[in-house]
Length: 502
Ligand SMILES: Nc1ncnc2c1ncn2[C@@H]1O[C@H](COP(=O)(O)OP(=O)(O)OP(=O)(O)O)[C@@H](O)[C@H]1O
Ligand SMILES: [Mg+2]
Image 1 (cartoon, rainbow, N blue to C red):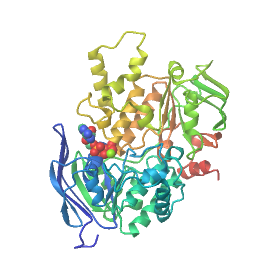
Image 2: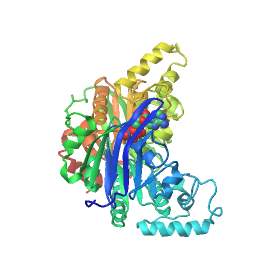
Image 3: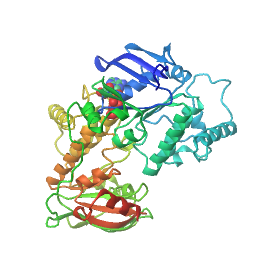
Image 4: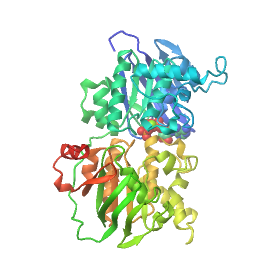
């Protein structure tokens, strides 16, 4: 932003409390035209809430908002859209059964201007928006048939179709593959060149440095830093985020060799259709196996198959040396397996239920035939899990929907760890989790293995995978193409090349 130019958006002195709990304190925020402004902070710091105020989802208790220098009253989402503010939500706001085009023109307006537009017209108009964005997609395809990346792009197209001048992207890359992230960054560059301003919420420092011009950091609902990105170091940003100096570098700590210990999970010639092909490996007690591979390489499918969600079409699974049959998740759990799924919102949580009930769910299942937990034991366990995972929640009886995105993720992890499984499988457990908690989670994963459990860990973030794994299996097209002990992997580049098949 050049000196003297009117900011596209100015938020002044914004405060907000939910049922007496303050989540934003006197926050001011200014966004220049054609600028990418990163918004960072720990899980629960108030990033999404601040943006939801700008978007008219919540109203602030005090403070004012100026758009193009003019004071505006954003009383609801229609007012925000009319003022040119579009948002790509952390939780998608799309309808899967509708087509891409229908979603682009889906408005919640009570009375549409002259009713609904025809499907054909919607497809033509959507096509024009996508062409403008440089994106190839069939606007007539039902959204549910497309990958998350296209959901993302559809959200962006929807905002642009409504002539948004400001786009809010809340952790847009959390569920994108690397090449999709690249495509998104290119798109952001093009939008910027057109004078569109972007607020970009992210926990990933590499992304922030790659695309942002400015950064603002929130901590416990207060603004603690605003700076041009070129004037500030990653260490300074991390310190602003967590409120103290931490070493955010992830180091591998060599653990004891596990080969002498008993195998807990043996997989022999396992196939699931053509998504998992002839996979064999042994997981020992106390061992952490990392799964590496590109999106679609079969990592998620492999753990889904082990957990009984996808069918086993060939091969055997043995637990503690004995072959087992796993046809559904209940059978998998009864054999001591647990899976923290990739898509936490649809698979990991009952969103309308309380934090406490979600945490206790697998435990209550386990104790169905045994003695029931009494209320005070439940309260104690819940408190224990909340503090161990630093879940930010004012009252354990609060519905999970009201938690910040990263804190919802922590509930999923805590919930499954409470079950004391023999084998814990985690699919991208740190997606959306802040920088401080990320290393806490990695420490916890090591602790679980130290307790003699087997761990299968999937992550697209290689530094993280390299920090915890004792062994890494590289998958491609559903097959294990490399089975490497951690000490055989000399560098991140080495692993990257193995993944890409170079
Ligand atoms: N509708 C609500 N009712 C009660 N509390 C809420 C509500 N929405 C958000 N909160 C609380 O406000 C705080 C800030 O949440 P917010 O979603 O803004 O965090 P965030 O910075 O986006 O975090 P994350 O990185 O995890 O997405 C959290 O403690 C959250 O539980
Ligand atoms: Mg959020």
